[in-house]
Image (cartoon, rainbow, N blue to C red; front, side, top):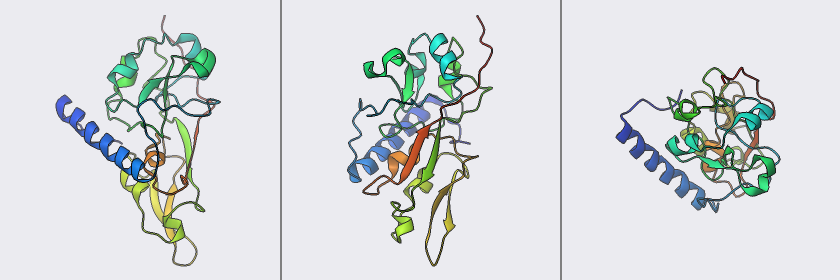
Length: 206
């Protein structure tokens, strides 16, 4: 899952190139992907991969920012003051800069309090395609989400009624990284993306 391993310099170059591509596609779609844009709704926050249950996350996260510092595509940011007691905790705004599912998940390795863990599911959100808004499902040529998805078999083109075909999300394979939402060029974003509201508890080392 993810991209092939590379040395550190090549990895940084790759993310800069990919990040530029994502921004160009988003700009072409009319999205304002500014560096510090935050979601208008903070009911649920997309946490980085491998996050423990939200209550446990809030209690144990030190807000140190280490996971933010090591994130190659700079996808992890601090939750804004509008997030209340969650302000300063790490989150991902998929429309601004999605997680790209690094092979080694350095954000988890950097988390000293252990609220990001390799032994927990990496699923961050639930994603689906709104076929009524999707360009491909309306008969136009578009494979942006499928071509850019970093998770094998999470998105694929399927045949619908008549001669139409378009992308569909495999909810089992999909991690909810948000790349598809970021690159969707439809006038109204065709990707429905909702952060998970239930995550498992874990025994944290003290």
